[in-house]
Image (tube, rainbow, N blue to C red; front, side, top):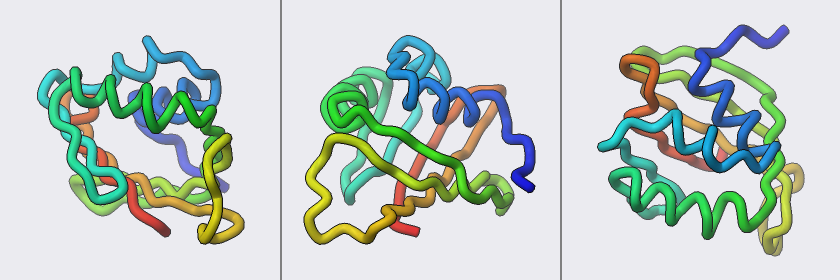
Length: 114
């Protein structure tokens, strides 16, 4: 059974799969930081650019597989699919999403291979 997750994290996954860009961006604090594929995206402007280019352009679909708490982070393992080059990637592609949430906003997100 999968545990209930905090609303901003739930919104991350539903808005990604639904391609709801406005809801997706609403969960991040103004000074949030995203780490993805070895790069850092700091602040809403950079996170918006990252989400357009790498997130929504690939029409990502995310399926939550596991949830664990490692205070102050919530780590979600998800199966990832979409329109991107899967050459050399594991099948299925499982990623760990390390969320830090403060005052109902994501302040830090690091995405790593599971």
